[in-house]
Image (cartoon, rainbow, N blue to C red; front, side):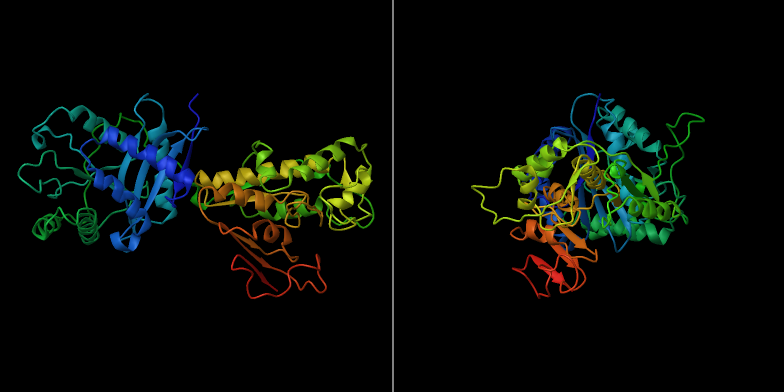
Length: 478
């Protein structure tokens, strides 16, 4: 079974991304041996400096569970002309029918739709033998054009785009256009601007101005014409896939109600989830996705493993229907913590009203899975994901729980995503997000902002006081 995920790389210098990019370059060299090494290295510069090149560059990689890159695509976006350009797409040499190439192309189509672009342009070597002295690649050229036809993408015709720049050149490429299934009729004026942008920005040192003018002047059809379908099997429908750009992934903790404490004064109840879910369903913008399982390491990367082990063990020991509340709060001497489980609750808690019971760990653990699922769905192409969980999490610090929070879901997800780029955490709960601030206070890869009620009368009282800045890494806005 070929299992992989596709993620977008925007920061080329993170260690995880650097390793993926090295694999991408090796695949690129294998498929395009004629590409100069300086052009390969230029990809990193293009990602770093979009203003210099006149387009933003996104790298999409398909990886298996061991971070082995199975394929990639490099997509340019030119915002001033509102179109995307597919620079490279290739899969790791091996099984032809792996499905990786199709999955990557579908992902970049979703990206192009998310940008509300006119579509994707790309260059494909021709399937016309008259244009190529070397016929050795003709079969592959036909296969590639047939692949794009499945999505409705075909060469633009009646222009001189497929004209060699130098007499020694061979197999000048077609300009292929995919309108993403939106039935867009490009005008001659639009295509002239698009073609000029491609030739000037992609080939600034290769295409002289006289050549560019010649190609642009040859565009006369209005609207622009595409070649008739040549490879599509008769009566076979075009490949169409709804983009996830307008969907919000919804991951709900279906185990939240097992943690229902009916004691007087306990205000964190299942009705919160039910009320939110009921209103969400009315919007028809959310797509429910099942939660996935994740290892404990994602939690212990954020929370003290001693706290994690205590929380798990004490909940397992407690009888059904029995809750314990912290009532003694010793000085936290790390070398000699108290031994009794009921007393030890105060060692790991910041208040007197957050209970431990049989199902607290199970519910909190399921909430973490939901939040990490939502984070991973963002990497897979969703623009927005919403994890609807209880117990909540933003009051849980590295070593302690409180405020009905046991694991800091948002912090765990932010840490998970921080391997792939910088993360910002905006907490708009009425109460100060003390957990995120404490966890990330010394780090510069996760920026936390909390907008909350005045701690002089709002929980947790001792944190979240008005500050202009805190070491430039954590801010409180009261």
